[in-house]
Amino acid sequence: MEAKRYLRKAYRLHELILSEKAELETLKELAQSVSSSVISDMPKSPSRNGEAPYEKHVLKMVDLESKIIREIQDYLAIEEEIREVINKVEDNEERLLLRNRYILFMEWEEICEKMHISEKTAHRIHYSALRNVIVPKR
Image (cartoon, rainbow, N blue to C red; front, top):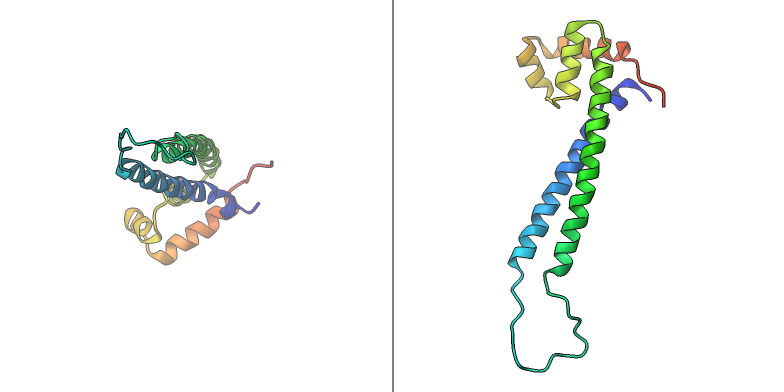
């Protein structure tokens, strides 16, 4: 796997987790907005199952929360692995740029501002840094 693709693994998983957290918030809002069952002495329809209207939303939330926890654990493991790979790059400037880009997920403009370099210089350093990244064998 090429260096850039390897280093972007954490970013993609991070984005997936954020997406699923947003979905979880939507499910929580749905579960809270579902009206409670009306208690009545009227006979119940035989076709109606006994589950509360919010039950399926709660079950989805529990499943999604479990999935997010597993993905966060995967993300943390990948991030640590990427951090170790970046720390093996000898040049401090290259290492800083790689950390900003692939650990902190900074945009190029932010990196340039933080490092006080031009975008052209940032891309030159990035290109050089990627050549110095040693991707672990799987």
